[in-house]
Amino acid sequence: MYQKMGSELKEILKLEREAVAIKWFLREPKDIKKESEPSRFCTKLDKASKGEIFYSTMEEESCMGGLRYSGMKDRKELPKNMQSGSFLVPAGVYKSIPAVQRSWQNNKAIDAGIFTAILFSPLVNADFIPDIVFIISNSEQAMMVLHANAYDSGSHGLGADSCPICSSMAAIPYLTGKVTYGFGDIGSRNNMELKPDDVMVTIPGAELERILANLKDMQTKTFFKKN
Image (cartoon, rainbow, N blue to C red; front, top):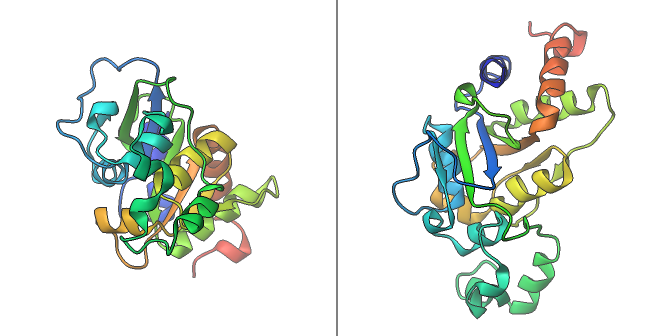
């Protein structure tokens, strides 16, 4: 079912890269390859959008933000420079620790200690129900998803700010159940192979079938017909 939806979503939106299905697991999944070496959460999204299927645990997450926001590690277990955000000041992301702390008030993290593993797969290969579906798109394709979300519900998506995409494009749509869109952050753009004009959209798994059905219906309407 989700494999078919992945193919249809890619065809309708004309996506260049695969939509990524992501699922959190209480235990390590069977019959799925484990990531061979540690990488950042954003790099995992990048790899899955290029066709790779794998799962990762805390040991395969190399970014402290990825550990924290994806629920793999409690914030209090991280080094103090990560807890305070002080490492981001000399890096040039923020001018001061208070600025970091104020910004982080809007970030969301999945509670640590619940999940053991996270599975990443192209949606076209997903034989599981995804928790969220992550898309790398251009602005027009993102607009189509947002219109499809509002088409029958009137719902608005959430616009992500400068927080890391492990929060904005993963934890936030997972926890809120809302379509989320954004431009990425400097960390993800430094660690993913993205075009300058690429944008990101995440669809909660429970909303995917509805949004895909709306995209199909919208194609028959005047404003969305292609000449």
